[in-house]
Image (cartoon, rainbow, N blue to C red; front, side, top):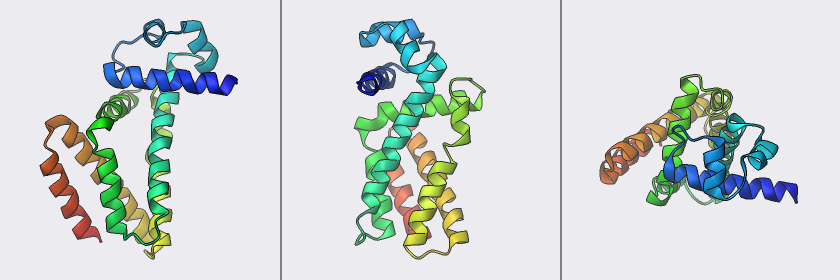
Length: 183
């Protein structure tokens, strides 16, 4: 039951912050916006920093789970999996969540204590998962790891470009060129 309450608060906080950004949001302000008290947020997350980190972990876990689900289609080529994952992350309905991710990523790079711990896992977890997927699909391990890192960097860069410019056609074309060159 306690886990359900925490999960519900986390979903509400993610929705609110995806729409409004983290900016200077306080724990009290977030709590008021999602219909709870700041004490409940402290109870479940420890602090604003704990809430921020929980948000990043949750959104990232959801995206990695989506990749795992896509990868379960053994009949799909690696290129097709890359296209399907791009369609997912480039979906305009996810843009608020992606903006929040980049906001938190930027804060982590600036040393924000609430977001900085994400730097320990935000790249390695993806590189590990992508490497495993590529090895399972026949790529040698050393090439798989480098390709995984290149793919992660490319998708994140194109996603940032898409969010900044709104030019989906250009981002799609660049992603397709990347796929053709790598696969």
